[in-house]
Image (spheres, rainbow, N blue to C red):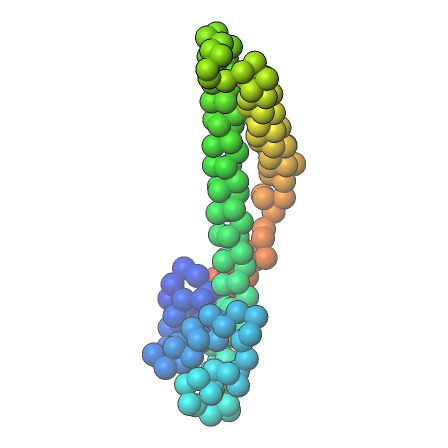
Length: 168
């Protein structure tokens, strides 16, 4: 059984030569399309050799840990982008409200009419309200899932299991 050298299972293992590791990286990066035959064909190696490397260096478990890691990172990024979007939309809503209020103060017949100002104010309030409501909903979801976050994810279980193999 090979021991890991890095902190993640998908990193190069002790005793894993350059060619077996290159083969694993090719397999790992194929995602849903990964097959041993595709690795053999891509590297012009025998299928038997690829199967031997995959068994010796536990490709399936390492690729699964990598997939889980990528999914977790994508979720973090999506949450960050969603939060930024809500903040941006709330600012737009507040800006529209400010424009409408300024327009109401200086109702200029050549500029915006009362109907236009009313619509701007209404839209600004609605945009801000929607952004704030989504933000509150996200906070509630995060609070509800904080207990789940404390439980081990599949990735963490695999990494912990992997680290435990070093002690064998």
